[in-house]
Image 1 (spheres, rainbow, N blue to C red):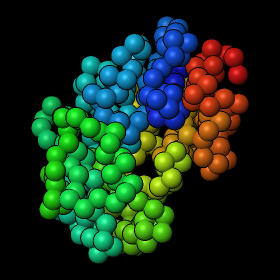
Image 2: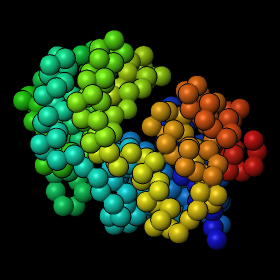
Image 3: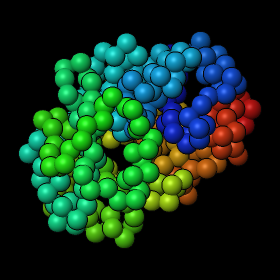
Image 4: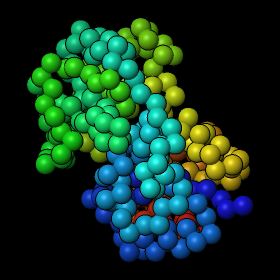
Length: 273
């Protein structure tokens, strides 16, 4: 039975400029000859396929932090969303803390997304938006309205701003949502992500394992951030890159000596670590 390898993208498999070296491409595609190779990312299907166009992906794609699981041919395996009532309640609570969110939701049955951004933006949100210039998914959302199917609601800001909101959300909604607060190690800010309670990477990885008929011992995962920790606890082998957050390294089975910019995952796949 072929083993399953699942990697996070940003700051794990991709270099910081979102590129892939020729070495990484060759290492991945060579491994894919005898293994199942997939991803678990906060990114969308379209952007992931664009970034990974030279790779042979033969395992399901875990997208939007785990809210969507699809095949490489875009066939839906699983979908977990927050409905409009829950989405609006989350946003309303955020407004009490004077914070407006980004909202990512489905706009049609073909799994196309809308990325809604608010009127009021803090400095960190403005920096985030620069990375989405000319993105066709972008839609101005001055009234902070959520969608019928919300994949995730994301607040970007600073710890002293987001920690009280995180605590209020957990107190108010409990296990009816998945809330993750984490530093954005590379930009200096923090982000707070709200998902369906089974819309995270860990639940998605479990679903993929069931779909493929794999046991934890068959699975190796790679990551760098807090949203990877659940996968690390589930997989038979968990691998953190050298630039991972310390709390991620603490639960990893393997901590690599190389960073994402040094092709850490590819070197592991090639047996060079």
